[in-house]
Length: 491
Image (cartoon, rainbow, N blue to C red):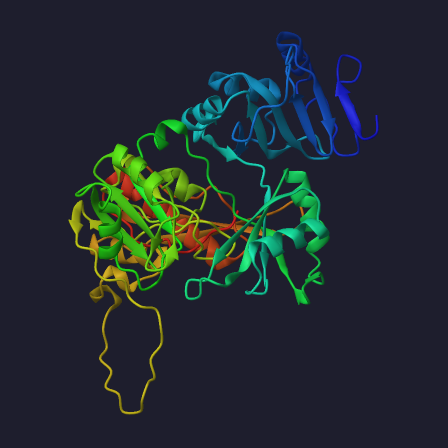
């Protein structure tokens, strides 16, 4: 059937050149019983097995974006007859896609599409880190079809309309182009743009056409890659937001000026302002005032710059770290959230929150000024004094690895122990992950810490493991909160 096999009584072990279900590897009778009980079809194609999609009696289009979750760390000998009942606890499954090996084992991950976003969010809440078998914990997080490409090395004098017209000429399905003005010269762009397509397939086809590195726009060889997707925030959380995100500010504009401008419509409404480079977060005492100010201030000019104002998007603390957003964690944040909106600290991503206070041993400490990262000339004869890294303040450290070592020392613990593991990806890449053991608490609630993401470089794997460990130490032992994690992690 042209690379497709339908699972039924006559063809339960149908092969498609990608996988074969064999007695002893999988309980065929259990799969047939599942299909008979649910009425769902099961089709195998292109290295994956689809259960449903659509389910029996479904009418209308598929569910919208945000209804699908990614499931990782699935035992290789576990299949739909065991997995589907678990995920049905969160709601009605539209489609369950289990990735399959040629041998008949699964690849360790799957995608589950529910009929509503609320069901998908519930699945994340109740099934992430769920013990699917004794000692085997699965990971569940939101899965989004990326429809956005990052286009770099664009001439800075090009306007949005020119970039949009050009991208429509060379690729199909272009919906919009996002272009940011330069922080220092508002008449120019920043040398890159985000191109939004009508579907993931359209974006993938465009990337395939542009990716070789030889494609040129206006005589320039462009850079093309997937943009890091913006994170979905549920409506209930957004209804509590009372912080505005303001972008396209002049670098010279001060926090005092911003506060004064936003207080004009209602004196005393603004609690505080945090500005970073050419964007800022404006905190209000009341949500109603924030919403009203957004309506009044969007498009207004401050110091000659036309500003854009939106509600700041809160990101769940734990999910933020797990999915590798650029973020800091604040012990003061309402519902343990930080804000991440459309501003690049790396061109491929959209999001950079303000600096937030740190905490050690449960005690809040004033946030020291951020250390400027730069180099100075070292002149002959300059006097040098030997010091210990532990005599420095935490703001001298930029990496999670150094912070973890620093805080272990401050708590009189032995240094963290790192253990390296590897596996191989489907395309043959070596993927790495570190397990971290904190000897001082190894006999406690958790004997080790290991993130649920694999990295292609040793440095990234170590940094990610340290970030993951710090997050869990903060959550379980209430030791500290971080003002690091400035590194952008790409999916």
